Length: 175
Image 1 (cartoon, one colour):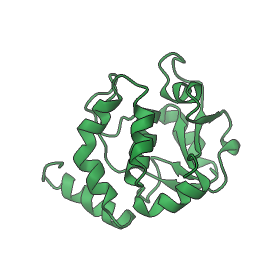
Image 2 (cartoon, helix red, strand yellow; image 1 turned 135 degrees about the vertical axis):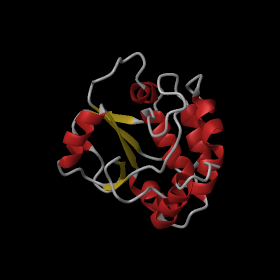
Image 3 (cartoon, one colour; image 1 turned 90 degrees about the horizontal axis):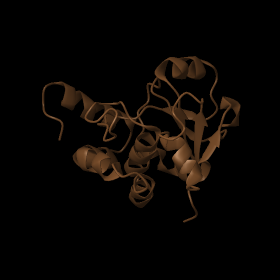
Image 4 (cartoon, one colour; image 1 turned 45 degrees about the vertical axis):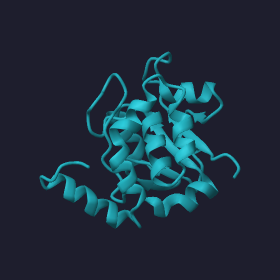
């Protein structure tokens, strides 16, 4: 399999030394763009405001057109995403941050965690591990989310992912 196309929209709102998106670029693992219009036209865009959950059903589109993430503050993300963003928007299901800044917080993921989570769910587990391997805390994300990622990766589609999340939030424990 040829390498997957990973694209990151970078809004220059973080410390460049700690930015996971820029580190992926330095390692040749992702392309970074600074304008939304440069996101790949038919890629899957990880969009926290999308009403459709990312699922294994998105694998073919990721394989064919790539995966895009946004590296910006939440306030900025809303402005960016209210504009027309190229690609197919998907929100990630609930995952727990393994990064030192937001450790243990649900949905407060770094760019690399978001990309790795999506890749894992889509069945690109080796690629997810490779992305995380360049961060000393990367394995922590996989350890914290192992059961969630395996469950999500076994889903058929977005509807099944949403049902799984409803089960987690109804009081049953997160697997």
